[in-house]
Image (cartoon, rainbow, N blue to C red; front, top):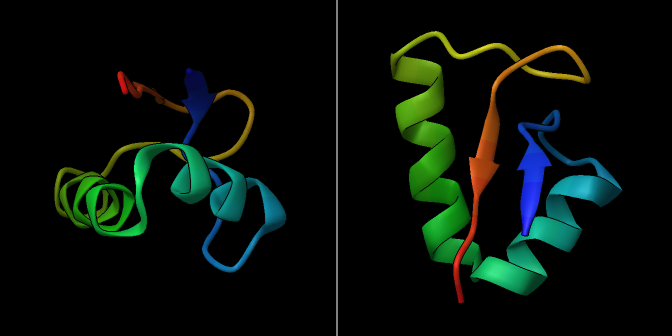
Length: 50
């Protein structure tokens, strides 16, 4: 699954967590915030392999 980084508490974040696992997605978000990744449509993306 390839998806953008979505804002916290959005339904799209919940979809990514359902696919990749809540803990994994939250760890990815911690890194994204620390590294100042961009969110929304024109931001950075993540690849989730399951």
